[in-house]
Length: 532
Image 1 (spheres, helix red, strand yellow):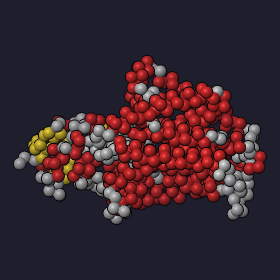
Image 2 (cartoon, helix red, strand yellow):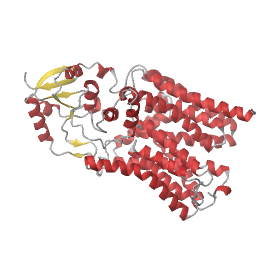
Image 3 (cartoon, helix red, strand yellow):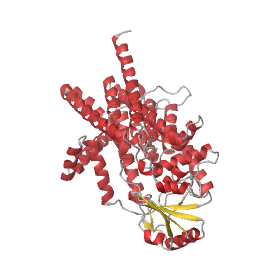
Image 4 (tube, one colour):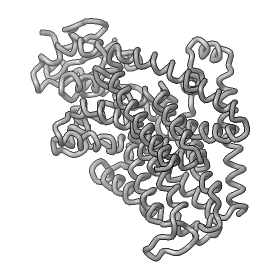
């Protein structure tokens, strides 16, 4: 075995080791299970409903209706592991730990394909595993890790499509083996069924096909093949939703501009990603430099994409097999990645302003953006190494050093206890103990139906509210909803459980509890019933 083969084998083994370290980090940071939120409970309850043979339903709610708001991808994966006896609540920890390692490995492979450097792949994988932000995304029971996994597979297949020789099945044209394009569309469909933001991937690959091909026959033909392979995934889910729930995604078109508070949340998340030391981050954030940092990074990426896109579209490169250079092939991943970065941001902004006002620029929402920035950082690093090798090496050591330092603090902090509904606040809750003792046919009205389902195993009713959080518009019928709830409680059929839980704490406690008997109060939580 020659030295090159030995180095390649050592690189693959090192990448595998980095992936294993990623799996171990998630398990070490979550000794009491993954962090849990309302959405987490929806995925877990949906998976349990599938395992019970009831289909994908809102088992955390007393109504137990069909789920349309959350696509079924993540719950389906949890249900699959549940077939082997692993309850989705426990299974999600092992699924996300495995995905952390797999995503690191996929990033390493993408880096190898877009650069001539095996070391670059190891650095990108290490940077991902050493990122506290990426660890946090994978230590919450949410769909983002699976979404990132399918997205990276789609990028890999798209890159192979432009590299492989013509398909042996008789397809002609300048496009490469189109089965790889079908695989790309398949993984894109899986990403869409994990998060609706997968539509940004569809837009990315269609636009890339139009830019990277040099004639309209290939542009239109290959785009049609891609859309034909993707469509069954989206149409099948939409048809199911129309049949069982008379809506497609449980979204309503309404105008609700992004608030200044939401933008500030996004800037804080970006500052945590860019600046590893918390004391430094606070000072930079206070000084208002984060906005400039975001503008410079995204602006540079946008300018590069526009220049490259024009270069490709104006046919200064040749995307036909024999005439394409290795350098041109290696540019496909960073180019499509940057296209996706902006397509994803546009899709999120559109969703926030027109479909779901409750969405915030939180870490899990911005995680795909950060994955794209990691890829572009490595691509830039390899370019810098070719110009200033010593500078690139020093900067790599500094970046990895700060990442590992911050990661060690994050793992130690998360390992202290559960997050969200997995915290001691909930599993030691006396109010939950009170609810568990109620007769099984008692209806529970609450501001925390997810937590009630998790700790009592029972579906609950959400409280009447004045504002629809998805549309930011007044919701009609608040008073009638309160009246119906009071009738159920005063008749002894229901109870009202109000939890002091931060953002979800109810605002209309006096109206909701008026005329009811306070049967239990502890740690800020209160349960109201009829007079005994």
